Image (cartoon, rainbow, N blue to C red; front, side, top):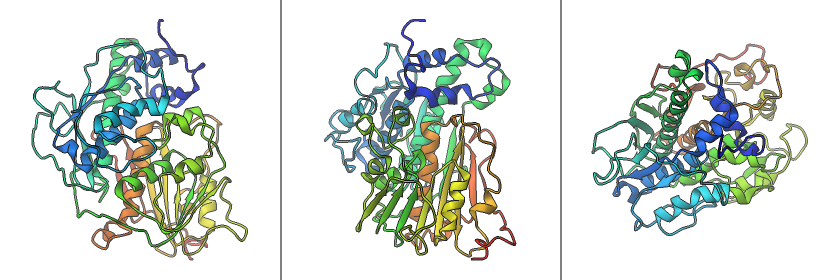
Length: 448
């Protein structure tokens, strides 16, 4: 097959290939079939010019391009060239105009040569309603302060909220990327019809999606905006992986500032991380993950990069009056964070297209990591096939919970225990659960 980039020669794409193959195919597609298909896609990002002049509209557009470029590097930008960039610049965005900033994102992530073979695209995504003079999009991204939605073949031209400054625009970008992914992979199934079966069609079924991270309803449930927020407790990040990277990305977008921060992770950035970490680009390769993540934090005090795994022993580990943010797949590492007895702890976790976050508070009705994750699953050594928009939505949801900690107007909406669901089937069935898990009677952490 011509113009195929083999994952064996290009390990950057390992997670994406695994994720696509993870669907319930009748016959799983070959890696080269997936690679060739992704490299030939040309999703087009457009949008309502007035909405794109707002901070929220620009945040939605930037994250949507970020997420889509990690799936299909040959993304195209169709927005006016004269819109000034009004959001703060960051390691991925360093231009004065929105078009230039968006167009540079794929090159920032992958470097030169990321465009792939030429191919005309029929997939367009719009931030809000689109100009009549431009191509009609298949997917329209809409949002409020706390909710985001992706609507396929949406013909509405109103209700674009340019004043929203909460996490809703970021949620919308994740749902838009998920909807685009399903469209792209449905085309793969159509191209190779012997690959797909009824179960695969269910996984990739189209349709509108909407999620509120205020109350975890699948609707446009909204609340007051929070701006210029500051967390009172020092924050410890256990891991600088894809989930916690998405947490700090969202914190940067939301203007959420810290007093002091510690980041624990022993690893350096390698090529496959560019596939999922929405804070990383080509220039971060070979650097410690902690240092790359620290670039996104706003702190009034100090940021301590600890290039080591977190261990709840010794005199220099954070404990007590701390807020922990944990984003590790390894369940005993979550237990280790719990052993430090932090005042509060938020955990983000993913598996394939599943998103889960949980909240733990000292002495509060037994909300304990050991009770939620009672048993370490059998480890196979294989990569968990997640993808950029899954990790991103998990981290953004954790950041929304952090935002609720800062404002009494939304404090009551804090997650009481655990919420989660399957992202790709978000609108297909009511699968986003928000439930309480009782503590264990003899657990010393629940009794703390």
